Length: 242
Ligand code: PEP
Image (cartoon, rainbow, N blue to C red; front, side, top):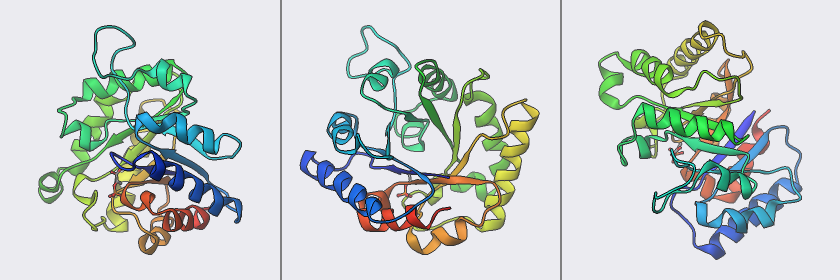
């Protein structure tokens, strides 16, 4: 399993150092079987990388540019993230799809860049509350998968994050997560993709609901936002994972 902590736009440099050191310290004093990855704000990737460099904790970015180089002020490209030791980059998080108007095509291009620079994209998909209420969740996700995932022979991860579950304290029923994961697994099979591709769940994960989430059949791990800023709770979930 992969337990991924997305810090979003949080922490100053001292807090980023303290958070990564605390997670490292907690995990060093316990045994755990999962892979742990943390996703600090881009500007602190080097700081965090220096702290976790001799550990098993992996590093990732929260986003990457659709461009590789050129006149794109403010962007950070896949080769730049690779230079700083990122193994992963999240692409298509709903806060970027909605907040920054990123299309499925943008997400596809970002994922392709990440793959081409030998990192692993965590490609996020998720339906909003209206889609869920109207019974359209499966179709919405299938459309996002069709349009956001490059059909090239490189590793990637899918993160299913219902938008209405992110930061809200609500999570879907296990039945609806299992239904969604079955559809995604079938989509991967129909698309001729590797059956080992991990499917993560994300949205209001905490130590209280993690145990039942771990019982989902196709769960390949968790993408955790808010709770990843709490080193003790985040570490407890990492240790709980198989
Ligand atoms: C996220 O933003 O990816 C996320 C899952 O957030 P939270 O855990 O805070 O709901």
